[in-house]
Image (cartoon, rainbow, N blue to C red):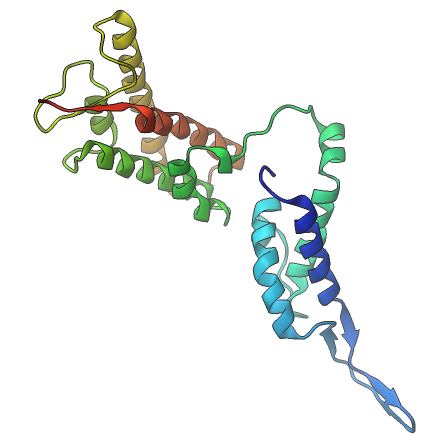
Length: 246
């Protein structure tokens, strides 16, 4: 939950839960009783809709699979949202207790803290639970940003990175990315070769299998590990010096 204001989120969830309390529409007064089998939410539907716009974003952060995991019932349009709000509130209020009792207190990796290229390419699909598509979106974003930095559109993916991190000097229309100054040392060559081989592994081991497994969703944890690998490569590209032929 890195970056999430927990107190604010709980307050917004509480507000929604109170708004969606169901009340019977029966009425009574001096000399009359009106019996109804209909119910309505405590707050007007327009107010509930406005609050739903906020809490849906909280759900996506706290319980991202809520749209698929919680049944949509026909009794009331807000039933699924209300259950999601109750679950999300419990998760936020008891997250420390749950972590202490169900597993070690190891550091957590937040996708939102990965390199901005990677998260911007993945975030919209990730928040809707489409993890395989999110990883593919991150790869496309990384490829596009690398092309932009090199000023190239004629190559892409593994070929693009192989040329970018080549240990050879820059050539006309073929600039290089240097992770450190080219001092002719074995260290320079090793660093360049490492980046080139890592990029090739990303496309051979992550990108290519995803392209052939379109009907298979990725587990969230595996997708997060893939994004972390992409983030490393994105950071190397972003921080490298662009070398062009004179």
